[in-house]
Amino acid sequence: MQFSVGIEYALHCLLYMVDMPAGKTVGIKDLAAYQGVSETYLSKVYTKLKKSGIVKSIPGVNGGYELARKPETITFLDVVEAVEGTSPLFQCAEIRQNEILLDKDNLPDTHTKCPCLIKVVMFEAEDQMKQYLHNKTLAWLHDQIKTKLPEAERQATIDWFNHIR
Image (tube, rainbow, N blue to C red; front, side, top):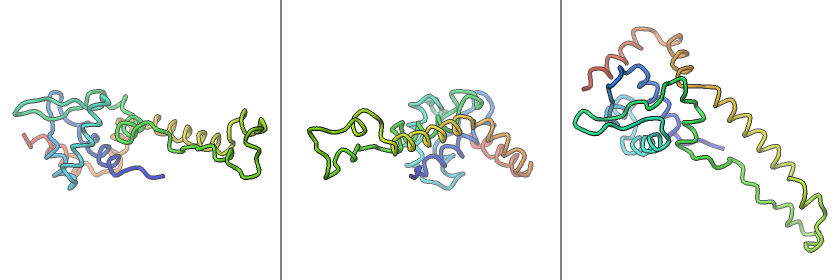
């Protein structure tokens, strides 16, 4: 199991947007330049974030992106599902029904009526991960960073984004 780097790009860039004044936008070019990441790839990530309602785009010369929701309501799970989609991580193909010694025309109930135990365990694990990611918000991340990052560095980031337009 592996999430794409788009999750990291999205969370870092969204984090910078938390401190932006209301009505101020930021462009993909600036977000990519600050982070040192691919502008093309980040643009694709932001298209997904916009489609999922996490950010909104403002057209025009001074246009760009702004958060569409309050940071307290944007969860890590929202970002993961926006960037990666909502398909389950585990794909059960029910291969137990392919066992060579089974009579395919007369499968026992243990192979047809009850869920595969492997599938059950994998889905439970995914549900626990989703619950954990659901409990972590952009506001939580912002608060954590405020306590760990020196104030001068945090303020320099805020100033950089406030002076780009």
